[in-house]
Length: 512
Image (cartoon, rainbow, N blue to C red; front, side):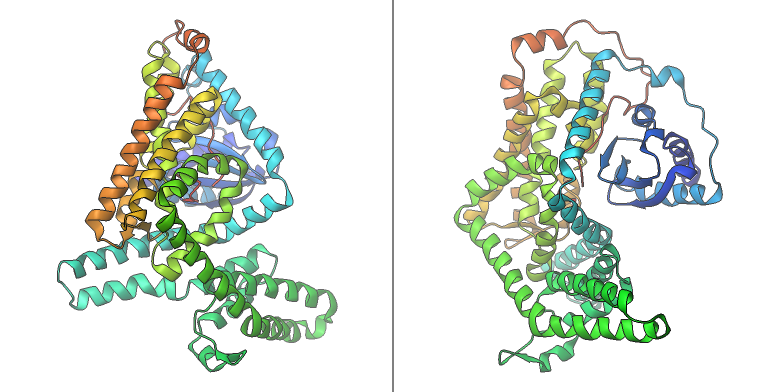
């Protein structure tokens, strides 16, 4: 029955994005179905947002993204891809016209404003820097499911050790959780070469040099290399170089010997550069990132947390949050967890508190309250897209007060870091309450979870208070609280929710 449900969801979505003939690619991340489209104008955004299964939609560069939520997206995507493959086009699935037209004018206004903001942001985001950062995100996003799974298994193994159980099961869990991280450089190299126009397996082959134990016999500047030195940053650079060398060879090597010469030169040239340059440089950069993160939260924790928690939502709006993905991954690889993600996750907590205050202040606005009510559960679990583009950002001032809540939560987590209790995450992607199973730190799971929970409560509370007290001027409050037509209870739960923000996580961090 569940499979039928997911196939039905895919079948409803397909005609609304222009049918299978309009779909050029199908992938997914933690919460979003990501589509490549031949003709953007054939998409019915309003009807998509009105579907019960859809939490929001967002257009980010060349990717059209439909927010379905964690878990559901992984089940709907293969059904959607299967439908695209089965037919050149799909017959439009009838929709409930009454339900689609049920939202009141206020919610429609917010949705329209959210769409305008997305369009404006999209035009600003097509800069070389942001397109490059989007490429970086596309390299790491496919790795997030494995990071999450291995991170949770690592946490379970650590819990068993703390309970005094150090038997064979603990050793098995350690192997399960550590195997992927030991070879993550290979996966990064594979995805990097694919993203930069090279042969993926050649990128993986060059990146594999970094984790090969035999590199310990190679000396650079009189010092032996260390297996794994440079980590994901080295793999990223090595595979990007391999893609460049391969493209250069393809243009110049005769076709008759291309199959022999091009792969050989690609691995030889980029491999030697990796051994005698990139591994050392990337190793120094990775060590510097870890040292800087530790210093930042140890010496300026409260201030750093306040700034990071308060500015993360604007960073997402500008598309700059994608630069944090390799930093998170580097910290996880070198230290076992990233201390930055729990701080950044507080932005989502401020957003939840803000939404609660909006619902309370606009008691007579049925449509906005319905939007908040439908999107709030996802926001608590760290999926903030519907609340951001459906509520706070179109309203204007509440977006700022949501940032204030995020700053408060981040400042509290940073303060505890200054006092000696570090809070980290063993994987990127989830945030909000969904991050609890992935928490790690230097004081044990209980203390770590308590500090993170306090940070969430601070974000909720300050986001609520700031929005309730300062989120509306009297004129706006009076206008939005005017009598509105009631919204039918038969309307889809997520109908008024507008689109989401560009994504890490965790994550991206874009998914607090």
